[in-house]
Length: 208
Image (cartoon, rainbow, N blue to C red):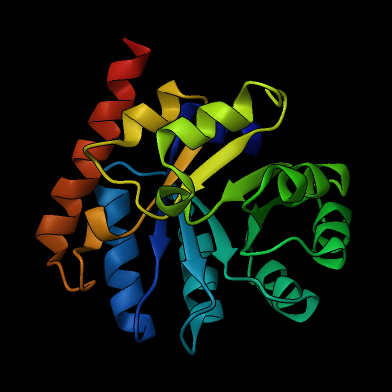
């Protein structure tokens, strides 16, 4: 299965932000145990590259890097086995490097102009962030109506209660953080595992 097909099948990205690598690994493994197969480890803490490398070696899920602000970070992520690159903005150099390494690349955008620009530059998917502030599921529908060919990941304000709304409105996938790890990021591994299971169950319901 290609990575894009896996995204279309699994739908849910767990966005791993933590203060240190040990907690990041704990969160990621709990999500994997709960059934999530798309893990985005953000470059928001020292040692993120080590977490990407360790999770990639385990081979239990598709592992990528998030908060990739420049090509240097993309190169580090690729060297540690990342399968996809997620940036909060649109950067043609990050896109070009990722494509040269056969990595799936997701560029961040907000307006319709930014979304089309990211797509034209070669992004495989566009992350709309923060989607709740943009208008929620209705905004995704407003974007997808004229641009049905652009795969969208909705992130920022998506949770277990509304993720199906975003998918119904045309999002290919969603990124989850607080609904998995708690509003302060401090949920226990057991709670994270159960939150992940609930998200996966909702997606499985769509498949019938």
